[in-house]
Structure formats: C-alpha cells, structure tokens
Length: 490
Image (cartoon, rainbow, N blue to C red):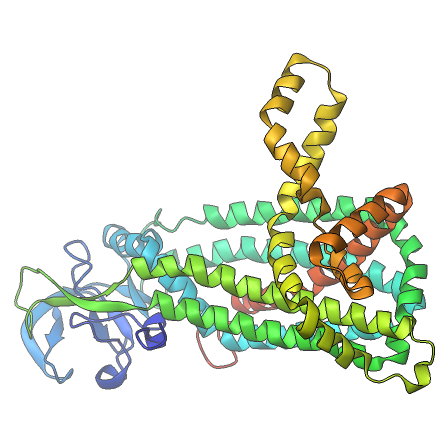
C-alpha cells in the first residue's frame, strides 16, 4: 500500500492530465478549477488563483510544459477558494461542484483523510498534551489521599470537554456552510447550496450531548461509591511508592499505542490513495489526447475493514500486556518476604508474560472487548426474563435459550479481572476468568460495587485523556485560520 499510494494525492486535486495541482511541473498552480462543471467534472485545470470575474476566453488549457496556453479556451466564472479548489459563485454551477465534493462517497473519504494529514501538527501537539496529562494522573496515584479531589476534577473536566466538543461540532457545521456560501473578497456568492448538508454535524452534536447526559447520570450515581475505593487505592499505591518504575509501564503503553495510531492513520491514508490514471471521453480538443482522471480503487478500501480491526487488536494487546506486567510486578512485591534483596519485579513480570502467558493475554485482548456489549445485553435480558411469568416472556426466553446457554457457559466469565488472577496464580485465561467471576459472586454486592466504582474512576481518567486531542484540534480548526505548519484550516 505504501508503495502504490501517494500522500500528495490527499492534499491536491488533479488536472485534465491526471497531474496533481501544485506539485512538480504544476508548482505554483495549486487551485483546481472546473471550466464546465455543468458539462463534466472530469475536466479540471490547475490555476495560481481562483478567477473573480467573468471573462470570455479567460481560461485556457495548457500544453505539457504547463505554461504555454492552447487555443482551447473557456469563459471564466467568478469563484472563491476552498481547500485549494475554486467554488463557483453561481448557484447552479456551484451545485455541480459541491455535489462532487460533499455527496460523492469516494471524494468525502478523500477529504477526511486529507484533513487529518493537514492537521498532523495539531494532532501531534494534542497527543503530547494527553501524554503529559496521563503522566500527571499516574503521579497522583502515588498519593491516594488526593484522589478524591482528582476524581472530582476529572468528572468536571470530562463533562466540560464533552460539552465543549458538542459546541465545536455545532460551530463546525456553520463554519463549513459559510466557507462555501458566504461572499469572498469581491466575489458575491449567489443564493445558498443545499448540497452542503450540515445535518450530519447536528446529529453528531446531539449524539455527543446524549453521551454527556449519560456521563452526568453515571457520575451522580457512582461518585459517592467512589469514596469507598480510596482505601483500596491507598493499598494498591504501596507498590508504586516502592517500585517507582511501575509508572513507566503505562507511559510505554501510551507511547507504543500512539505509534500504532500513527501506523493506522498512515496505512489508511495510503490505502485511500491507491489508484490508476484512466482516460475519459470528452467532447472537445484536449492537448495530449483524452481527459485523464485519477481513479481510486474502491476495492482496496475494503482492506480498511482488516487494517483498522488489526491495529485496534494490537493496541488491546499492548494494554492487556501492560496490565499483566503491572499486576505481576505488584504480586511479586506483595508476596516477597525479603523485599530488600528483591530483583526487578517489572522484569520478572515481563519474563512471566513472554514465557508463560503471552497466548492467554493475546486471547483475552480480543475476546474481552469483543464480548463486552453482548455480555451486558444478555445479562440484562436474562435478569429481566427470569422475573417474568407471562406467555411472551416464556416465548422470548425459549427463543434466546441458545444465547443464554452461551452466556452461562462462557460469556459471563469474560472480564478484565482475569489478567490480575493470571498474574497472582499463574492460571490460564479461562480458569482465571472463572475464579474472578466466582470471587465477585461470593463476595456479594459490596465487591461488585467497589469494582464498578474503581472501573468508573479509571474510565473517567481515560475519557479526559482521550478528549484532550479532539477538543484541542476542533477548537483550533474552528477558530483559527492556519495550523502551526501553515496549512489553511478551511
């Protein structure tokens, strides 16, 4: 993919010969202009700027040297620049261009990937801020007495970030609409263009608001229960105080995870840009033969269905491996009689992972996230149906009997707690999952409440760290004109 793809294609449109505007021989001619968009969107010309008025014969095709004009000329129309493309001022003509840019699925995917590439510096800075924030949270873990205040601040930050992200998405809808339809310099844009559908942004904004409402509700329910987990956190912080190097394990996880995110983005971009230069029939005199367009291979994008899950799986493997190493190192420290002569617990945990439990960690890293939602749904359905005595209840229970059998024999045991038991007892993933489940079942409601509250604490930290980058990038894109690298945010 990297050999056949071309990242330059994500930042530039192509002319009637399939050559990229602003690249190589067309350097200095960065703007794509369609002379007759109502006739064909295949014919495009690269220009140094967008024409601002109507001129008969004002736009001419050029020879292969990209400078000499031919006798094939067109009447120019007023236009405004947008993402290195010229958007016509006339409503009828503009609709042809925006239909291609905003309604064609292939072009929409191309634009999304191009926007990610252009904002690489903003994304990189956002990831650095997230990394620093994660380090700060890890430092606070060494001081459990401050955790109640940290958790409260994180809840406020998480809700604020979600609200801010919803607002920025809403503003982005207006910004994109204005970039297409508002007047520019001396160019008066006629009417409005319905092809620029901002409804997707509105729906996304409502979805984010709904997630924020769920988070507020969960915070109100679980925040008081979190206080009971602080004693456990104080006990679990003892290894951190005595083995400070444990703090490096999550940081290494974040660093390797960031590398996988970069690899995922790069491979997705390379896949999207794979294509050939095809010839298209066009009624007119075209220098050098027929009109040529870049035909992106739609079939190669099916590979994204493989690339994205594989990268996510590798990230899950990294997270579960780090979790096992931390649990193993803590177990070694807790159960060692003479801690003064104890060698590196982290190194021993890593050896145990590679030598005995790597297969179990890989297995758990894929099936635990995969069955998390089915486990919750089937557990809820089983609980509801077991209380009913009606005919419909029995019918639904009989219909789902195979699913409930799978739940009883397999799915209900799946939990991330299994990795802690693997580190403590050295059992396989299956046995560790069963031990964790039965321990929680025997301990009744209290340990389940503590486990839920503890998971909520970690979850809040993860939400805050995860939201820093998108909120920062969206804020900069919405309110600033350029990125740090000088790319326009339009």
